[in-house]
Image 1: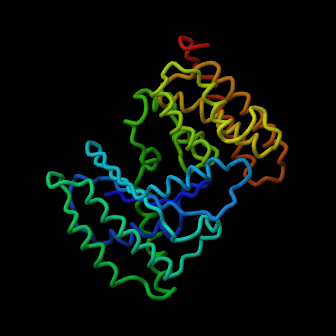
Image 2 (image 1 turned 120 degrees about the vertical axis):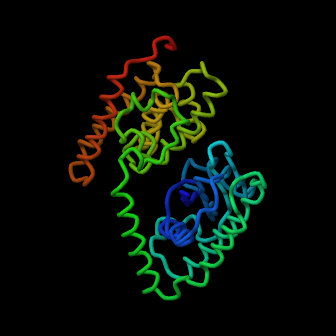
Image 3 (image 1 turned 90 degrees about the vertical axis):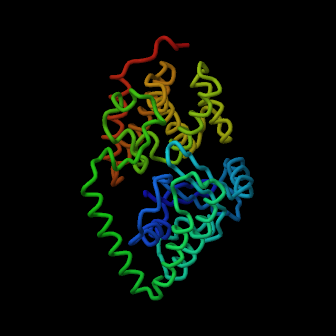
Length: 329
């Protein structure tokens, strides 16, 4: 069983050191509990005392309201996927970026909170599902007796986990490392976007590897279901206004987010439709040109060369795939 954990605040989404250790700890020496759950995910939603960053007031309010509605369990039976969403007070949202250190008390709270979340699977699993939830929960509870009690014990577990992870990763192909369910995308999308870079959700320079791109991809997917013949540039403009930006933001930080969204939009079209409408491609290419100028001007930026290479890949792909002229404005 693949077991992943992540966290969200109103303005951040991704992995957290303490949470990444929990699945390895709980699944150590675990037997097979059944085939009904092949992929399990838990997302911790951390509260933020505020105030939100400038122009993100709506995102802050929406997130806080959603957090109040939790917990939530989603079980995709045909895909053998289970996802659990919980409101957590493990850390405060504003402490996200300083929460890299893992101490035994924090790790223990994370494990205990995770086990409590796993009990929620009982709301979706039935007797017909091939998964022994009582045995799974019993196994997880038994791990509590071997929780690291000192920092040295925890550090030893962390180092051992890193070694096991490195050994597993060495056996996995670059495509398999992406852990993508290709059923979520157009059948031809992987052929068109034929480099793992375009699909990397952990690379800030990939189309949907940054927070802006990841959020846009999901928003675009929902919008396209509602309006399959709609104008993608209009969708982009409405999304930017929802963020509280003008279509031509003056602040550099806002402009960067709008450009990230433009690039993400074009590649969302390619991933979900296997075709990019001309207006969306032009919007993305214009954004890439601005991003290239900014990277070239940042001579001392340590990631400058990597950024420029990624922009070359993005622009080359948009030029190579052609446009969906049948859906042109």
